[in-house]
Amino acid sequence: MAHLGPSKAASSKEQAGLRYPSNGKTIYHRPLNRSKTAELSQASFAYLFSEMVSYAQRRVTGIQELEKRLNLQGHPIGLKLLDLLLIREPPRSQTRPLTIIALLHFIKINLWTHLFGRQADRLEKSSNPDTPDEYMIIDNEPLVNAYISVPREMSQLNCAAFVAGIVEGVCDGAMFPARVTAHTVGGKEEGEMWPGKTVFLVKFQSEVLEREALIGKG
Amino acid sequence: MITRTVFALIIINKAGGLIYNRTFHEGGLNKISTNDYLVLAGTFHGVHAITARLNPLKFPATNRSSTSSTGPLTRPELPSGLEVLESENFRMQCFTTLTGIKFLLFTDTTQANVDLTMRRVYDMYTDYVMKNPFYQLEMPVRCDMFDRKLGSYIREINNR
Image 1: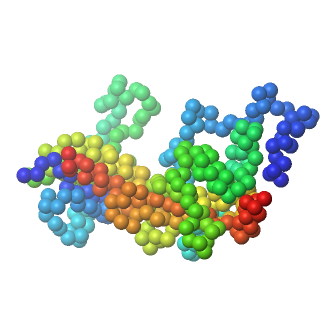
Image 2: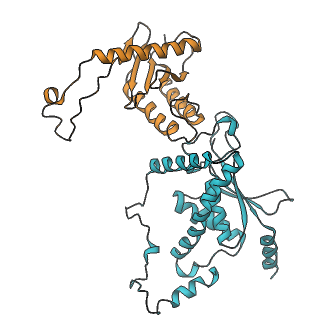
Image 3: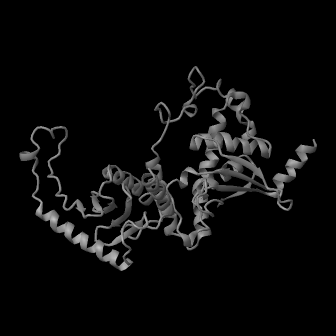
């Protein structure tokens, strides 16, 4: 269980078998990429992602199914990243986020910085009173879509569904089960500043809000 | 009247088919129909192929004796074929990629740095067309992102 994590890890240091480096830094604390800025080639990623989209596209019939597949490709990454990013935090803030706002901030700041080298542009709560379970993470130009032009007949599609899957994985891993979808909101008018603007709609399940209300009372 | 202008860009695939055709400056070149553009692309492809055969092969042993000793390059340079075509009112520059795609840039006769412009156009093609999962090789280029970036780059040059 995630909430037992930090204390367990600390006590296991004394146990025999596993050896820890004296400074307490394990393989998980450092990125595998040892270059100075830990940067990767965007071109290689673009080609890889392009192939991931074509791979998913060959096996589906509709746009929704394609987004579902991209989402599924991202989900396990999110689950693992939650653990990795938490273990890299300093020990006192190593607990998983306990409220929706803390979780979304963790995603906006830590997750986005780790994946894309910058924070997400905005966080919003749905202003519609009928959907209090919906939150929005806004990215003005998602890195995964940097070179992608979606054809007109597939205008519903946003390939950032892959990133939505990662976010969904983080939410699920933190015990905030949610559905996350990516929607294009830019590009409707000519000469717009952010034609690729994307909203990640996070829809939490009802039990999450129930719990949140209980915590708020206590 | 108007100098230093990029008029139009045409991209021809390796089979001689027209895959992209865009006019940047109204009034620079006369308008011709899409069919004529297809004929132009096909004709140029043929002329280019013939002129490439006219061009003698350069062998590294004779022409590039000491300067090319940096790498194990033994293959002769491919003959380039027709590169520039000039008329009284416009200049057409052709750039062939290693994979046989041809970029034709129609500019004003006094336009400088066409090589650089061509290079940037090729960069954009590799970024916004080749890295797009929805583009099929050898097919007409329909990528919004490519259109947008190319448009703003050429506008910048034409307004300079």
